Image (cartoon, rainbow, N blue to C red):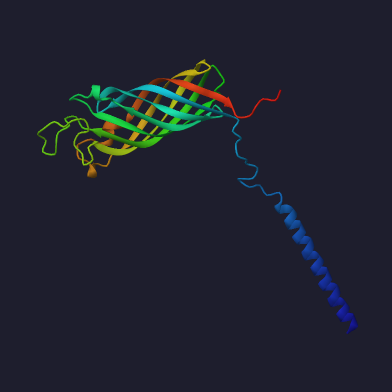
Length: 227
């Protein structure tokens, strides 16, 4: 009987030690696991800037080539990431009987690659809202021409979501100015079921080429340089 008890105790001790060793090995192995977010740290903002960018786009609207005038007001982080507001319009002076009145704007994000180089590239993306009027701008009875704003429940024509992305070639003119040229494509989401005119997304979506200037402070340091 004593021998049996001794054998049982030895067996239990061996099993316990083995389980502890296996658990220790498991914990050790888990420390080698690689995680998606492991090692990622917030980017430290070392420089900040602010600038305005007047811009002209030549765009294809409703089968016609028309200019759009506008620009952006941006905050710049580390000379690379710009965040701000942007807006464009055909302008009242360009309203005519064979085209559309068009304006849009929204939040703009732009990333610049290697901004310290004389020439470099940037990728702007805009998300926002737009509005447009059809060719004739008639009232609901199609009799009388309407003033700026056209036929609509809210007085601003068709309203729709706009998403625009593109690429710019940018050059450093001097410390407080840059020049850029580029191309982009505009997506407009008009819902004809809720529309008060005959416009559809094909008439206001399309490619554009653009040229503009940036004026402002681009590289203000947030930390004082050590002497």
